[in-house]
Image (cartoon, rainbow, N blue to C red; front, side, top):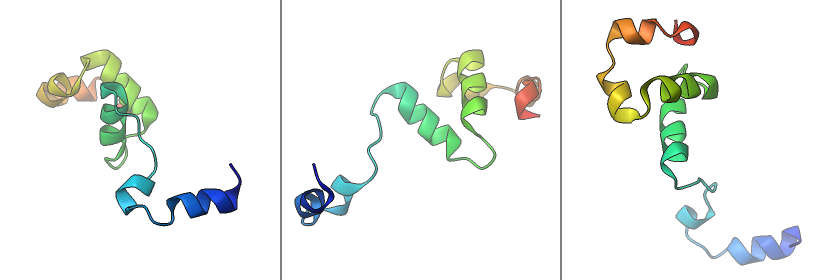
Length: 73
C-alpha cells in the first residue's frame, strides 16, 4: 500500500485505531507493562519472566529475591 493511500485509509479513523499495534497475548502485554516502568528494559523483563513466570509471582517477590537477579541490581 502506498503512503498516500494509507493516509487516506486512516485519516477518518478514531485515534485508538491508529495507535501503534500491540500484540494482545499475555507475554506481549506483560512485556509492554513492565518495560513501561523506568529502568526496566526487555532484558530485565526476560529475567523477571523466566525467574518468576508471571506478574502475580513477580509482585509477590521479596526485595531479596529481586536483588538476587544480577541484571536488576
